[in-house]
Length: 93
Image (cartoon, rainbow, N blue to C red):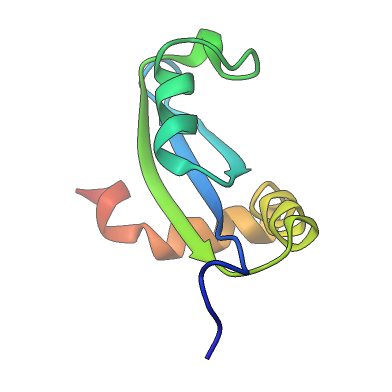
């Protein structure tokens, strides 16, 4: 059994822009704080895309390097296809 005290959770998340309807993917160790930073305009890469809605997240006991790799994957064509399939009901209403 792995203790949560020795391992960190990393979160890969996807935000949807209320302004341009596009998606933004990122990773963090603290999803709640990071989302609050996005909403307050404290993240330059998504500042002009507010309002933002958290539409998808994954939580895993993985390395930071693996989280970064997953984030990059979600930004690729195949990653976007994965998200479209995963969020099919959300996207179609």
